[in-house]
Amino acid sequence: MHDRRDFLKTTATAASLMAISSFPLAAAADMKFKNIIYTQADPGRWEGKQGAHVPQVQITGSKVAVVTKHPMSNDHFIVRHTLVLSNGTYVGSKTFTPADKPESEYTLPAGYKGKFYVTSFCNLHDFWLAEATA
Ligand SMILES: [Fe+2]
Figure 1 (cartoon, rainbow, N blue to C red):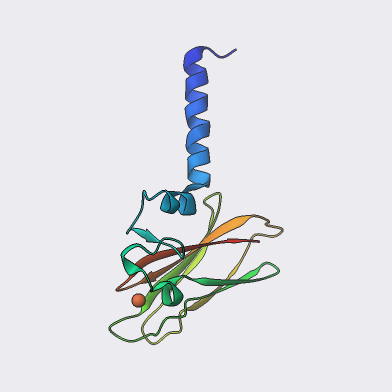
Figure 2: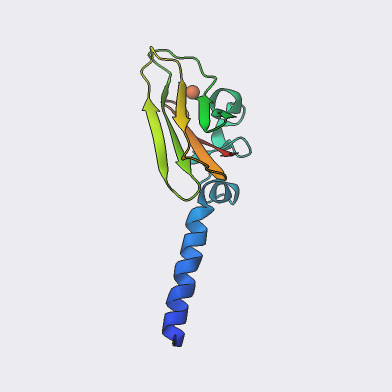
């Protein structure tokens, strides 16, 4: 038996979990993270820079290839990619130097079906987020 207090705790916890699981693009879309997290749909102050900053995702079976179509120079380069599942599970990341190509590869958990998120960080143009579905 739950009393009203337990019910409220349970409800608040469930709501928090829902908020976390749907966090990234929803949060960006409702402007909570405007000019903090950049997306194709909301490039904020970096309007027009989506093509070189939104990470591109190619899924082949359980393999995910991520590319940011961004030039790499000592002054301006992609620093890092990261892939996280929609439930928050960290899958992997790769850190780049200006001499690298901004490309990375990951393996999704066996049989994974669902959304995941890929981030790409530019040293001058901040933190970009893309969503994909396996
Ligand atoms: Fe950039």
